[in-house]
Length: 491
Image (cartoon, rainbow, N blue to C red):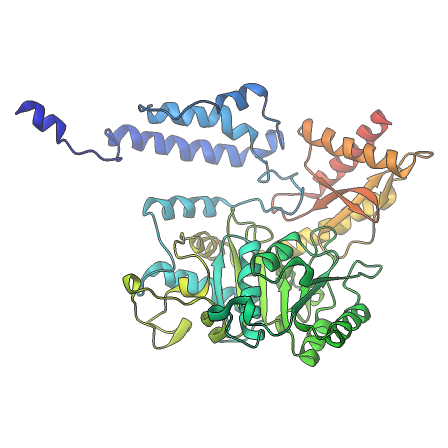
């Protein structure tokens, strides 16, 4: 009898000792706050040494470890060797820096294993709907615009272009697939467009051959006459142009296409107008710089991140679609085991539809909570000032580069990205390319700062993308000094 009771004992993953787990939780929160508060005292980035890599080899554990021991492993082997984007001098690629309130929100969402998108009359859905509505209003889209919180601009772009495809194809794509198209559909984007656009085009079945990469002008914006010519050529060849993708801030340079001109072309050519606003869309809330993205509000769909220039922790992004019915028609699918009401008043009503009907994911976490809590905490006016501050910092760095004889600017700053390189008289471009790559590595390996590098017209430049609310002007003073120091040492 005793053996049988032992065999039938039921288990759980909850703590066996709630008091000690509570104490560990308090310690983790305290350690986290200490880390963020003193983040300037840490290296921006550290390369994981061989012993760290070796630590993550081996089979899964068959037996338990104490919670404290697991946390100790995190402190020793994980925390010091992450990307470092929360540091004030992290400017590589285009990455946000996170917020304290956002971290709390992640804990709260995880503590209830929160689901968002499924079921009606759920508080999580109301939160997401409000965040989407805030984004709509802040970015100038009309009332009634549809939208969805996503994991990143790659997902947002895929959703936006899926709605474009299904709306513009001229046949029932969901029933017939791409085989029902009488003509090859074509899409147009800048040569500087992000790789996620090509991925979306391929995943949606257009094929990469359908994506036309339009040449850029001297400012690296999409060349409007070339766009018109390419569309006319495709129509003459009996192709079917369906979509033009404009950039509200390219990843390489921050270049913003002439969005009003593209919107005009799309209206004339009966094409869908999609805007990739991954980070640059948020210039719309900077008091002195919102004119830079004029015309963005005319888009049929807009993809943008909140984990970049809204400084939230990864991942969180959004897509807006002007035609709510077209948005839902592209994704809504209700098998019998998920039967639910349609909602009689749409996205702004009380009886809401399942938000999973507006994207390709059914299983969705509560990503909107960190946006909701952080925006509530800080207010949109402060966000606008921070974005303006970052643009002002980019112009400040531009001035430092112009004043340094050892440095060369790639092109004038248009948004919040500065590309520049170290120069040494007598060195070829090939040697300078190698030298600037070594400077990037030196800055990173020494824990000084994290820029990345880009190639512009065959030349390699240090790439400083300022989407960091912790950066200060003296950080850029330090960057310029260290670039020159390391460059001189190497040259």
